[in-house]
Length: 496
Image: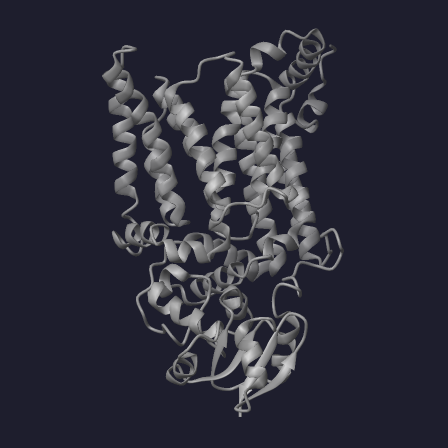
């Protein structure tokens, strides 16, 4: 192949640059889908509060039912970043940040596969499959930072466990950021435990000579990272908040993303493909997996089947494991070898990495200028069929006084839309409200015996809920309440 001239070497994109741009722009096109959950609204509002007041809220400010109660700010850093994006570009800024996080995660997966296989084609294909699997949980929320941290954390542990040199300071630094960004930092220690188990298993079974230096290195990485988690505004209480929620079966079952995925829906199909690929690849015994990687693949597969929110973590952890196994087979095909050689020769002469930064700057400038880059050219917004957007427009012109009772999945959106003028009854932080309070919420929503007493005790003056909920059907017939607004998504009742 002819040598690429110096200018072309800086301008032509690497394959990972192409991957970044494709995923980044694809996320920009689907931007409104990032708001199909109410929580982004709450995160944006808290981020704006931190920016404007230069303080992290340690007590609840957003509901009247729990106002002033101690709050564990376990996602404050992500909220600050989303809030800054909103401050400068509105929802456009939030989408821009989310798109960068997702595209960066894809590139990190690519780089790890490339390190393990030295194949550009396998790296591109399997990283694309892995990032497509994460789409099931693409939302403008702090967990997108966990995608990034898992893609940073896991390869470093893997290299450390294989005896390669990895600077020890990287582990506590990643965990410090993770613990201040999202409560799923515990997943990092689950991944770390798999490598510890591998060494302990080898020692117990005497199947291989274990390296004491590697074991000590893993212990140091885990210990320093554990200590780093205590450097947050809530200190040790962060662990109680993060671990307490996932151990509460009632609250977990009430949260849709903790349930199993619907495998009849296309969004879950990439996950199924990865599982089927894993079964096929590992059944062929092309390469014996280390115990840690077997634990990571099977463990996160189980967690992904059990709870949809774990599927992206399975994909990020398992993508490099899957790609590493069949490389000896595919390299036997002459056509594959020819294409791989041509791509490698071209990439060898490329010197620039301008495309990711250029795409961010260009898209950012277009969004700042008011261009609508979503697929429908309507601008980024919360879906009117999932959230009381039209009801909110009506409330702008017809504000209601007194305490509101609201549907909990809408709480974050209502905070985003009406706080501080109106505080909510409940929002998506079920771990904060707790089981007892959430049960009272359900008692009212389902119009179970005693619901009237609870409404009086909470001083509820008006109600904003979906029209098909039992409470809406009961209030429609109750002469003490008046229907003052209704559409296909929401209904508003006010006490007479």
